[in-house]
Image 1 (cartoon, rainbow, N blue to C red):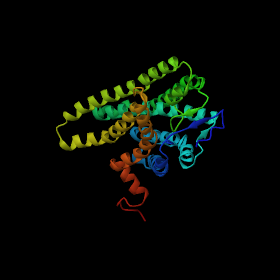
Image 2 (image 1 turned 30 degrees about the vertical axis):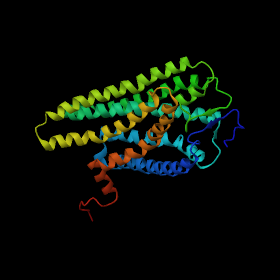
Image 3 (image 1 turned 120 degrees about the horizontal axis):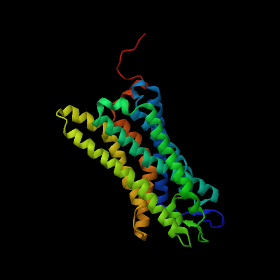
Image 4 (image 1 turned 90 degrees about the vertical axis):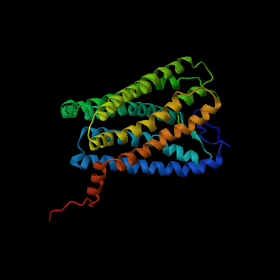
Length: 312
């Protein structure tokens, strides 16, 4: 039984209706978290230490890796505690902080993936002007826009969500404090919050995804015009890792935030949310290291196994 003795906190039910599944999820989430910590830390170190990775693409990749580290650390330790034992409680302050960070960094990632798509678009479609267009100052400005947009979105949406009249049982039917789950917990009128979430979903999900699709449509046309098969492979290799990350991220996020209201959709949304919040941050480093020759070369150099002659 879940302890309900804390009226000022919340009960993160998560997957408590499947007690046999919780221990399995504990192991899966723990391994995923360790992969996230190790993989993203490695990408940050490689992009800082290797001069060949001092380019705009790896600047944005470093931002994405740092974001994933912060994002997962904001809720996975609490989630592991809840999965391991019967105690599912989280304080109101803890839930508030978790909601603020979850919203802010989730929004930042949506914008950052769109910025990375723009970087790939310029690299493939305007290669001769790439250094002029995507200069270091613009990179810093675009990254700042992504981080500031996430912060503004969280400042706007977190307070109205926390001011909702929550039902006395305070049982959040999710593994993390996020907007859809807290809206479902309310016993009052949630019309304003639902409209706010719908508008935010369009601005933060649909608009960046549309820009990404437009960018990759232009990239596809440019690649098809390349006569050399080697040139087409090189152009495709530049974009394939990012396109795979975008597909995994947006498909799971849309399944969580743009799903219809029904008990089945709600239960399914928890598993999509688990993949979006836990799975994609652990897969991103693997996708970028396994599919990227420059990152693999930097890793071999760091390990002293790059095959290049060493100086005495």
